[in-house]
Length: 220
Image (cartoon, rainbow, N blue to C red; front, side, top):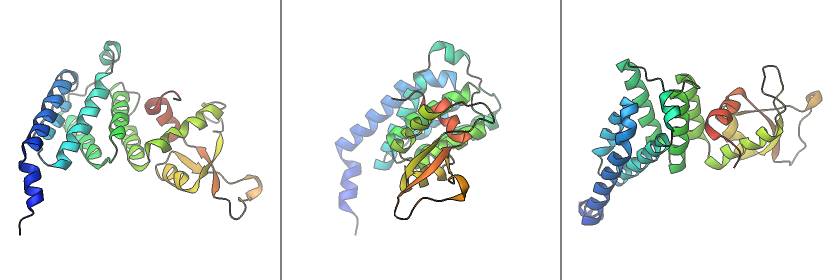
């Protein structure tokens, strides 16, 4: 038997209107950015042919990405280095689309836009962009904000200077360490935290510092 509710959802005038409005917004936001970053046009064209609810959500994430790129001032855009190699453009464009499709939170599209801007300015290599996108996908946005507490405790960022330590709950510590942003820090003398204590001590990694410097910005 055909799922009538699904059929009605996709054929309703309201659904069609949402699709048209989403596509119009995409092109309005994307036209200017695509002039600076050619592979953005490919992302917009993929989003444009969508029609399902999931696709509409993808459109909205693409729109958030475009708006994030659009925040760049003229001076920043002048510093963007766009590799004209079509293989590079395809690799980055496909990578960004795959990340957006996986993200379950709209705010993550904003963070990916900031990371992509840093990559276009050559502050992040493509591999570092991949690391940043993985961290964004692995953690909740509120987890990432916790990194600002390390920033406040930081005594220095030069090589060889010890990063500060902070105690985190087991869940957020697991997510942040799984993303490579923090690492467990064993207490002096090889000791461990006492039984029943759900807080563990972590220190910021170089990848976590990269996220703070290039993606998360100043503490809110």
